[in-house]
Image (cartoon, rainbow, N blue to C red; front, side, top):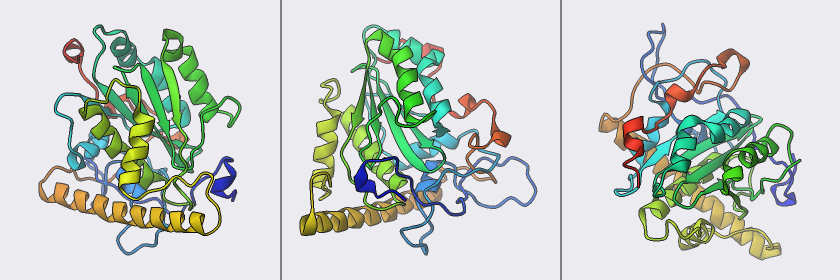
Length: 303
């Protein structure tokens, strides 16, 4: 495996997929499962930090799969945030030209709504996109600090970049890669996405949303938590920063598990037998119905 610090295409180690919560689907042999990217990102309590962070390949999913994030986060009071179902990179790229995205992008005055979309590259490594309709920007995050550039990966980040350029980019939007390097292992990419999502929710809830300054906000968010960017560090300083970042991720894992437990006790989670859909040819179907999106009547109110 390529070492993360070499800035090449680096993937997380894989193992068996984890179950997740979902809506009962009438399938024999049902068991309790988890319904959001959370399941891929957080290994069981008794597992090691090297456990799976990989999108599962199974066939079925809850209609409310994208809504588990809502159960474990504090929603901004004055800005709507919509969580999209996790996709592979070609399906994530297709979202730039989706009708609802096009409508919100054309709304005037500019909408304060935003979209959070996690996606996997070759089912091995998690990335995340944050759409800001107020800033007319899409922010890209992945914890190894890779930048979305053409030619980096056929059908992957190149596909995201090309699709953006042909859609929102043609309307004057910017695609901004958040290039800070934080991850030093091959397994914690999904947990870093959860942390970045929490930072995004704070950003869009505050006065800085609209400043086009999420990169600096995220840096300050991590810095306040004792997290350091690894780029440019070496020797003992690098080792100390890596250990500090790993300690942060271990704390985030525990926190996310706790949130899921509290959400379950509050009856905010659905139950069923399923795994993330759309990551294998056998599960190729329309995932739009799994997304949390505004209806047509809400579009005009999102300012």
